[in-house]
Length: 448
Image 1 (tube, rainbow, N blue to C red):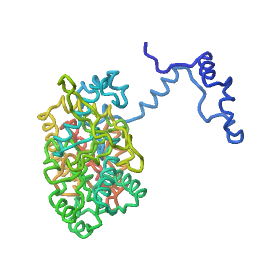
Image 2: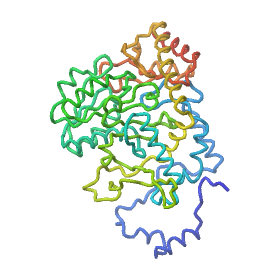
Image 3: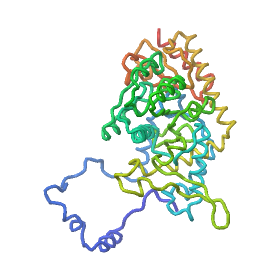
Image 4: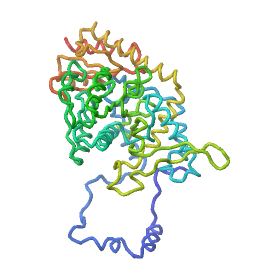
């Protein structure tokens, strides 16, 4: 029988109090000074019967504009992609969704194998040697890459492109403050990292140069030029990348990246209001002992059968904190499993096909918007996002789009000076020709 919750009876309460050696709730809290105890009533509604509560919550949920009922052109780091139906089926199995950490390999082979497969596929996509068993999200993965770089190079400055996701840059600054690391932002020029300015800023104190590929504006950065600037001063070359795009784009590992990080959300993980998602972290072999989080390795048992274990475990969850490589000692195992199942179900050909569809549909949307009189801000190659300029506030236009059943793009004026009234538009494989043409018409009409 399935329960939404398990009620606590009076006998349950008495049994628990007895187990800890007290008779009453007041006695349980007697060590807390009387003057700091809360004596009033909580500012919450009175309890309702379950049917009435369900009705109220359903009405609140119905106010949300969701991607199942609306055509979404909103991306900015979280995307509306196709997820094979098998993903939910697999991650709903109790042995996966109740598992936390496979500390005991003899009874956790399924969980360990799933994580190993995730690591393997991330390495294939990124062109790197080693990947960990996932991180919290793309933002924390990026910040951890910067901290690894500072520790590896013994330097105290990190250069990050202005075209990297604004939220990831915020996380980076927060991490860097505690480690006394200077974060310097490299400005963009025509929607991509200003290489001339990068070459001026990089120096012998630079620990890492961080760029995004495709970047926050959807544009494709020139990784060879960035690599040359970074490695010319013996700094680490860090690339944050949408893993789905690597089904069509040359992987960062081919351009000499030292660390490739990002968010696996495009593979089988719903938008779910911005999280939780699943960060990935991939490195060259020489850095594998510095990788934060967990690594799963393949081995053989006494009878020669293939098996899996946590490996290289001299990590933050097992050693002194002052020797730790990171403060992250957990991972997003269930979401990593979802990504693994999605990538497996799609296969190499499927991942490439979806990536190509994103490229083609974004190009079609750009051309359709041009025909409807909408200005395209940056004339650069893109993956599935691009920037348009409107003659009205983005918030106002998006409200009108909602009335037409469309979720509009991200308001770049919220995070970038000089890009007020500019919208970041995302076009994934799920957008139909009819939806794209309606969106282009509505944006065109907003100019009148």
